Amino acid sequence: MNDSNMTTNILSVTNLCKNYGDMVAVDHVTFDIKRNEIVGLLGPNGAGKTTTINMILGVLESDSGTIDIEEWNLKTHRPEALDRANFAAVYAPLPGNLTVTQNLRVFGLIYGVKNLSERIESLLNQFELETHRNTKCGVLSSGEQTRVSLAKAIINRPHLLLLDEPTVSLDPSMAHDIRTRIRQFTTDGEGGVLWTSHNMVEVEEMCDRVLFLSHGKILLEGNPKTLPAEHGKKTLEELFIAVAREPLSLEPHS
Image (cartoon, rainbow, N blue to C red; front, top):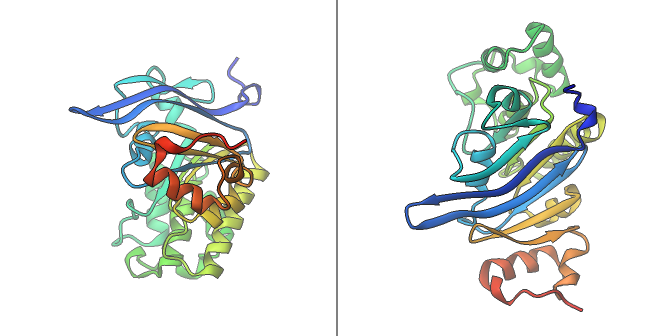
């Protein structure tokens, strides 16, 4: 019986690999995300974060390995798996020539959302977008566009939410608001979040667990509040810099 409540992991990634010719982009990556958990996927540019996310979203096909969203394997049950996921990313803005309502309606139709009009009204209220419902997304502020993107990202009530730099370019007040909404999504429902960011203060605040990628491999994993000290670093940002510059020198600090 396919009962999501019987499945502890929202996402299970096992031995995921992706090569581009001779370049190894993702090298036997294995991790999971549990229900009501926010996991940070960290690493310098080129570490393999976006490639990993794109494989989880089915945009790229892996060379080997498996991806399961709850009990559904992405390769063998693609529609069922992707129905349970959604994403928001700065490099994937919503069509600027469509209004807020039009964008939500288009994506709601793509995801086959039932009672779509009611769902759109609920999201407009939840994200304080009622006054912008007929405004084209291209003329909204960056903060408003982020709110619309998040509304789109949860329109199908996903259990797996993938967020790539969700608060980049936002002022501190708006970033705090977005973080609050994402935390609410995680704690109030059955979902889990995979979060990428270069803002280590934000990551430490938001993430229950972090994975550091380096050259396509998971180099470190742990609690963002305690992981730096385990490797002789004072802050998560200091640890990030060490991963980016000298990954081979990182050893557990006794």
